[in-house]
Image 1: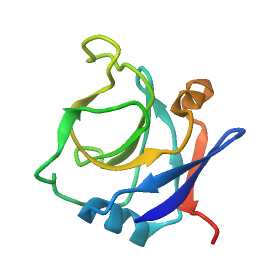
Image 2: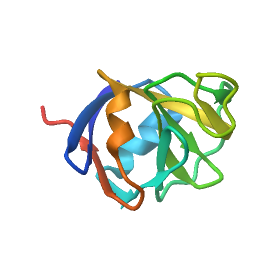
Image 3: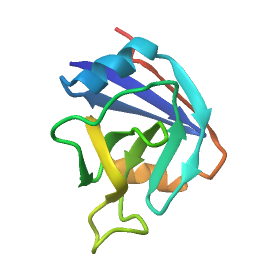
Image 4: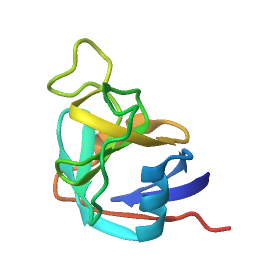
Length: 125
């Protein structure tokens, strides 16, 4: 559907958006900036978006998934187990709308520190 760039600390990582209502709403509010929260191997930040859970919302996600957490509301990037994981699979605290996927190695986000400034923008071109 579209490509975005995630810029945080010394990282610039691209991600592909899925063709979902949440992805369309995220695209409409770009660029967005925030302050990172680290929760296990997930980073998330508050965003100015109010969207409902979609029919396929879930807690169990994959490494590299981008999720929208309505309770935040927050933009979540999953790159490994979280405190509520069962094993090595990332797990959200409560259901999220998965709206995209990191291109490449999502484990790079392990270096990001809490309170880091993050920016998400539409990819050039």
